[in-house]
Amino acid sequence: MLGALFRGKPDKFFRGQVGGEHFEIFRTIRGRNSILPIITGWVVPNENEFGSILRIRHRLHLFAFILAGAGLSFSGMMAAQIVSGWFTPVGFHPFELLGFLPFFAVLFLFPYFFWVEVRKSRSFLVTLLMLTPLESA
Image (cartoon, rainbow, N blue to C red; front, side, top):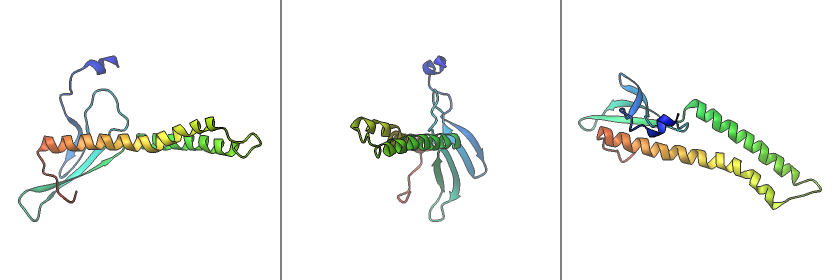
């Protein structure tokens, strides 16, 4: 595991499967990253000009999606338990608001870091393939 931290850059920028007009790839990185987006795409002919149009879509790996859902469910149940305690004779204590941190961390930080990775991989793919982004994309 520590060896992965000290290796140089990977020899391949992307890994995955390419076949016909479709592909499914992901960026090669050192170490592990569970929110690394999977890039699916297809090539279609450009009917207005010379060349082709590359359509890409980023998605989260199914395991990471399930993990985020489980984390959101667990932290949501924890937050609901805290709120239900506010209606007891003991009442509300400001320190209990810290129990909401895991819920909001999963709810907001997980998508944020996913989209950071999407921007990295998309711009790297555009640069690598020397693509011209369309205005509508």
